[in-house]
Amino acid sequence: MEKAFDIKGSIVQAYIVCKRQAWLLSRNIGPSSDNPFLEIGKLISQEYYKNDKKEVYFDGVVLDLIRQEDEVLLVGEIKRSSRAKNAAILQLKFYLYKLFKNNIKARGKLLIPEEKKTFDVELTTDDIEEIETLTEEIALFLYSQLPPQPQKIKACSKCSYKEFCWA
Amino acid sequence: MKRPIYIFSDGSLRRKNNTLYFESEGVQKFIPVENTSEIYIFGEVELNKRFLEFLTQSEIILHFFNRYGYYVGSFYPREYLNSGYMILKQAEHYLDPNKRLYLAKAFVEGAYKNMRQILKYYQSRGIDDLKIYIEQIENLFSKINYTNDINSLMAIEGNIRQTYYSAFDLIIDKDEFKFEKRSKRPPKNALNTLISFGNSMMYTIVLSEIYRTHLDPRIGYLHATNFRRFTLNLDVAEIFKPIIVDRLIFSIISKNMLKPEHFEQDLEGIVITDFAKKLFIDELEQRLSTTISVKNIGNYVSYRQLIRIELYKIEKHLMGEKEYQPYVTQW
Ligand code: SF4
Image (cartoon, rainbow over all chains, first blue to last red; front, top):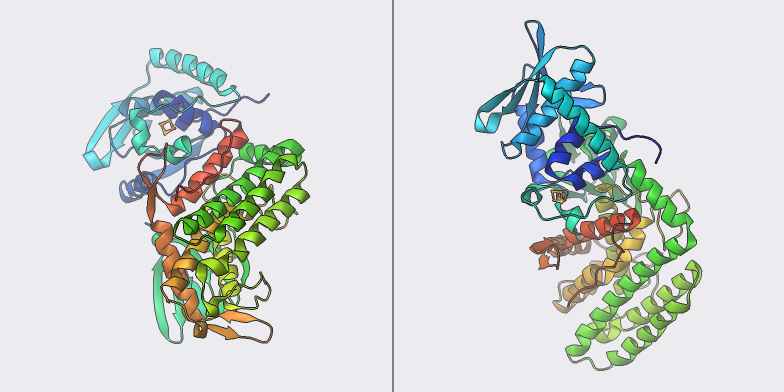
């Protein structure tokens, strides 16, 4: 395949949790939508933050929520639980990085309404470097003809690829 | 849980706000989209474009049957799980004769093995005469190794199925439900009518499951693609027809749930009444939600999930991840 893959935030996030999932996403093999956990996710973002702009498309990524605050843009990423918190923070940083590359000042907030938790996320210079190395690594990884074999990890039990992976 | 909706009465279907709305002879019904997986229409129903757009948005597929219970067609909304990668893989396996033959053979093998399991089961229950039928289909199947083209493969499959069907009289053993010979369009007796109806239902069930995957239903392997019709669902349905439809028919008839009066003589053949359709569908829904344990997947999966898993196995085969082996019942 000659064309490099579009690296979306969801791919970055998936890559941290499960590389196989990232590979599948890159081929647009999306998860089955009747997974109850996905439905819950959709409902949660519909239910909360009624006054904010949601699902904003920007440079190949989808921002869950944006809100203008003073001079900076607040980018919110809504999650069902804090289970994969680190991957979610990285995903958010990746969005901030994309915005930064387009000269947009922004800060991030990880939102977990069901747990009444929020986490502030800022992009540091170290982060920028880390993200650039990571996206290169991901791009290289995605070239492989086959996805890595599924491995039973903690994330599998609630993953919407479950049936696909173990079929 | 999303469920299929079955409409037998005449009336009109509309969108009302964000709900499906059905009106029939003054009776009004609201059907929430969140709970609806697909809609089956058996009655004379009017609908408009706004309604179809709403179905597309809600990812709901629509199946039409005429008043005789024959499948007419489906409204298959724009695919929402679109993967160009998967479609290319699907086409690759269609265009390469060896790859296509592999899959086509796998479908025939799955169908054959499941038919054989059914006969074996009834043999073990004391119908000794089934032995010759089993031997006959075993012989027919052994020819598959020397087959290099789809047409002869189809012919073998046809012969196996014919032999298998002719064993139905031994299994059912009721004068009112004699098989005689397979007759379609129109079926000449009640049993053939029931088989045709059951098979049509099976095709639509598989089609609905395909809609929830990345596969394109227009590219089949055993059933030739003519780029206009759905064929992949026919391929996959072959595997499940014996274990879902035929077993259901045997159980309904042996429990005397259906009688000859539930079928009507029409000008040309025998048609199934609404009562029989409803009964069959009720039983079918029950069967589809029955769970069984499957190796690898571990916990219990329903027959409906089993169909989906079969499609995932095909996807993995197309990707080159894992060679496809058809599901065979343990019965
Ligand atoms: S089921 Fe497990 S292996 Fe498969 S994509 Fe999900 S997390 Fe990865």
